[in-house]
Image 1 (cartoon, rainbow, N blue to C red):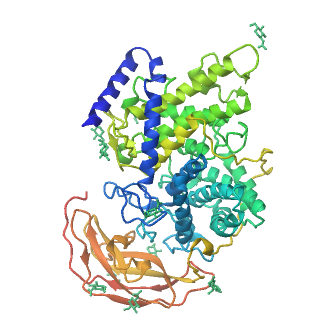
Image 2 (cartoon, rainbow, N blue to C red; image 1 turned 135 degrees about the vertical axis):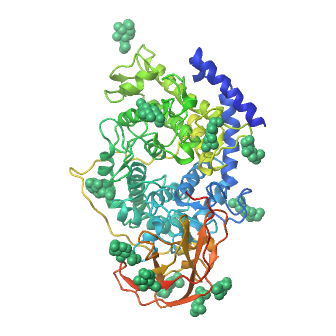
Image 3 (spheres, rainbow, N blue to C red; image 1 turned 60 degrees about the vertical axis):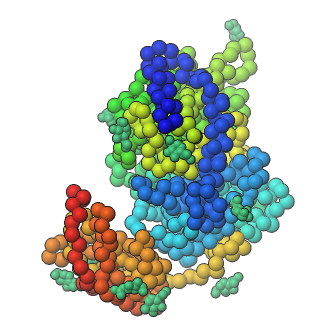
Length: 626
Ligand SMILES: *[C@@H]1O[C@H](CO)[C@@H](O)[C@H](O)[C@H]1NC(C)=O
Ligand SMILES: *[C@@H]1O[C@H](CO)[C@@H](O)[C@H](O)[C@H]1NC(C)=O
Ligand SMILES: *[C@@H]1O[C@H](CO)[C@@H](O)[C@H](O)[C@H]1NC(C)=O
Ligand SMILES: *[C@@H]1O[C@H](CO)[C@@H](O)[C@H](O)[C@H]1NC(C)=O
Ligand SMILES: *[C@@H]1O[C@H](CO)[C@@H](O)[C@H](O)[C@H]1NC(C)=O
Ligand SMILES: *[C@@H]1O[C@H](CO)[C@@H](O)[C@H](O)[C@H]1NC(C)=O
Ligand SMILES: *[C@@H]1O[C@H](CO)[C@@H](O)[C@H](O)[C@H]1NC(C)=O
Ligand SMILES: *[C@@H]1O[C@H](CO)[C@@H](O)[C@H](O)[C@H]1NC(C)=O
Ligand SMILES: *[C@@H]1O[C@H](CO)[C@@H](O)[C@H](O)[C@H]1NC(C)=O
Ligand SMILES: *[C@@H]1O[C@H](CO)[C@@H](O)[C@H](O)[C@H]1NC(C)=O
Ligand SMILES: *[C@@H]1O[C@H](CO)[C@@H](O)[C@H](O)[C@H]1NC(C)=O
C-alpha cells in the first residue's frame, strides 16, 4: 500500500519535470536524507542474504552470498561467484571504513570459497587445469548445479581474487602477513592461475547471455592480474598467470570502436554493443589516484565519458523507456542493461541506475584528486550536455575563474539526479528488487531483495560521501606491448588447504555419452539423474537436461555428455517433464553403468556411449507450451 503512495509521488515529480523547471530534478528535496537512510537498509539487505544467519536465506551455508531470496519467477536462490565477489568487495570496503562487525562475513567467505574451488561441476574440476573455477553458480550449500546454463563465465575468479586481495592488503598492514600468505593467498593463486590461463578464451558475459569476450570481464581480469603480481611480490610468493597482465591490458583497448566501448566482442549476439557492462567495469576498477588517460579505462577517462553519454542516451528514448519521457538531456534517467534487452520485457535496473551515479561521483573524485580536468574532442559531447560552455581545454582550480568547480558541481548534480530516479522507484520500505518497470508507475520487477542491488547502493553512497576503496593502479602508468598477441600461461592449481579446502587430488574424468530413445511431446524434456553427486544424487532438481538437437520422429534421440569418475559404478535413470505444472514421469527401472577408464590427457574423448530405450509411461501434453 505505502509503495503506491510513494510511486504516485514519483509520478507527480516526473510530470512537473516534463512541463516546467528541469533544474529542480538535479537537486531533489530530501536526497541526502533518503541516501543516509537507504544506505543502512541496503547494507542490512545484503547481509540478510548471506549464510549462515541471513534472515531471508535460511539453509544457506556460512560465507555463501545468495543472489536473492526469490525461489520462483525468477529462481535466484543460488550463489553466483560474480555477485558474491562484488558483494563481498563492498563488505570488505565497509570493513576498511570502520565497520569491524563485518569481519566474520569476510572470514566465512574465504573458507566457503576455498571449499567451493574444489567442487567438481559441469564446467570441470580444480585439478589438473582449473576448468571448474569458471562455473558461474552453485546451490546455496555449495553443491554443484547441473542444469543447462551459460558456462563458463570467466569474470568470477578475477573478481573473487580482487576482493580477497583487498582484504589481504589489510591483513599485511595489520601485522598478519603470514595469514595473508599461508591462508588467503592459495585461494587467490588458483583464481589468478585461471585468469592467466583463460583470459584469451571466450566465455559468457555478466548477463549470462552472450558467449564471447566481455569488456567488464577483461577489465576485471587486468586488475586482478596486475594486483596479483604486486601482492605476490610483497608476500614473496610466485604468481602464475600474472605475467599475462600486459597482454590483457592490450586486449582491453580493442573494445573501443571510435565512438563508444563495445561491450562484447568475439561474439555472435548481433547487438549494438551499447551495454551497461561498460560502466559497471570502470566503477569496479575505480582508483581515486589513477590518471584519466590510464589504459585501465577509469571513470574519468575521455573514452569512458563518451561511452557513458552514448549508453545513457540510448535509454533516453521514450519509446524504449516511457518513464524517461520528458527528462532533459542534463538530467539522469532510469538505465537498463542494454537497449535490445527483453528479459522481463527489458527494464531499468536499480544497480545500473545507481551505477551510473557512482560512475560520475568517481570521475569527480578523480578530477578533484588531480586538481585538473581535461576536456578533449572525445569527451566534449558528454560535458556539453551538462555544461554548455564546455570547451576543449584543461580546467584547473587555480586562477580567477570558477569553471573547474562549476563543472564538478554540474557533474555531481548529474550524478545526484540518477540517484533521484532510483529514489522515485524505491518502495517506501527501501527494498530493492532487480528491476523496475519501464512503464509508469514503474513498479519493482523480477527478483526481490537482490543482493547486488543493495551492494550497489552502498558503494554509490560511499563514493558520494567521499569514501574510496584502496588504490591499486601502478604508480608509473602501465604500458602495453607494441603488438597485442593471443597468449596464455598454463596455471598451477592446488586446493587451498589452510583455508579449509578438502585435499582433492587429480582425478582423470571419463566422458560418457548418455543416449536414450524417448518419444516426447512438444515442450516435454528429458532429464538424467543418478546416485552420485555428479548425477544429482537422485534429486530431480539437480538432474541434467538432455539435448534434443538430433531428435526426429523416427529416431527420438535425447543425449548428453557427462564427465564421471573412472571406475565407479553408477545407478541412473531418465525422467520426462513438461513445464505445465505436471509432475515428473520417471522410468520404471534403474540402470547401472560401470564407468570405463579415462584417457589421460585427452579429456574430450568419449569413452562410453549408452544406448538406452525409455522404459516407463508416456506423458500427455499439458497444452501450455506453444
Ligand atoms: C517492502 O515493500 C515491497 C513493495 O511494497 C514489498 O513487496 C515487500 O514485501 C516489503 N518488504 C518488507 C520486508 O516488508
Ligand atoms: C552467525 O551466528 C552465530 C551464532 O550466533 C555466530 O557465532 C556467528 O558469528 C554468526 N555469523 C555471522 C557471519 O554473523
Ligand atoms: C585473444 O587475444 C588476441 C590479441 O589481443 C585478440 O585478437 C583475440 O580477439 C583474443 N581472443 C579472445 C577470445 O579473447
Ligand atoms: C527507440 O526505441 C524504439 C523501441 O525499442 C526503437 O524501435 C527505436 O529504434 C529507438 N530509437 C532510437 C533512435 O534508437
Ligand atoms: C583572470 O581574469 C582576467 C579577466 O577576465 C583574464 O584576463 C585573465 O586571463 C584571468 N587569469 C587567469 C589566470 O585565468
Ligand atoms: C509494466 O507495467 C505495464 C503498465 O502498467 C504493464 O502493462 C506491464 O505488464 C508491466 N510489465 C511487467 C513485466 O510486469
Ligand atoms: C593430500 O593428498 C596428497 C595425495 O594423496 C598427499 O600426498 C598429501 O600428503 C595430502 N596432504 C595433506 C595435507 O593431507
Ligand atoms: C547428432 O548428429 C550429428 C550430425 O549428424 C552427429 O555428428 C552426432 O554424432 C549426433 N549426436 C549423437 C549423440 O548421436
Ligand atoms: C550407486 O549405485 C551403484 C550400483 O548400485 C553402487 O555400486 C554405488 O556404490 C552407488 N554409488 C553411490 C555413491 O551411492
Ligand atoms: C531407483 O533408485 C532410487 C534410489 O534408490 C529409488 O528412489 C527409485 O525408486 C529407484 N527406481 C526404480 C524404478 O526402482
Ligand atoms: C533408437 O531408434 C533408432 C531408430 O529407430 C534405432 O536405430 C536405434 O537403434 C534406437 N536406439 C536404441 C538404443 O534403441
